[in-house]
Amino acid sequence: MSNDPYCEIPAPRLVDWTASAGEPVAECTQCRAPTEYPVTVPGAPLCPRCEWLEAQRTACSG
Image 1 (cartoon, rainbow, N blue to C red):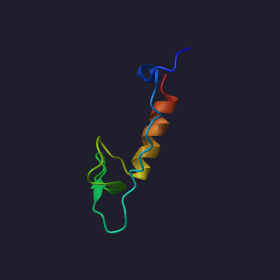
Image 2 (cartoon, rainbow, N blue to C red):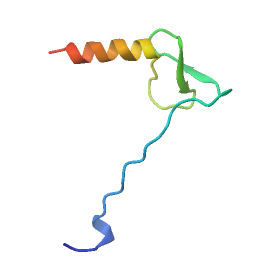
Image 3 (cartoon, one colour):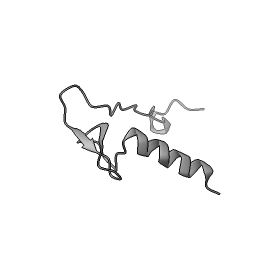
Image 4 (cartoon, rainbow, N blue to C red):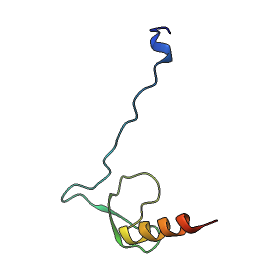
């Protein structure tokens, strides 16, 4: 095994997307309720209720 840095795999970056106090929060893309994520979060943020419902749907499918 070589010590060549070309083959190194970087560790995954853990990102905390929770909004800070006073920071504007994103709307849920399904029900428009406020989420716990800042408006700058990439993707389609969901509120805790819609996240739970989505997890139920995907866990029971198929």
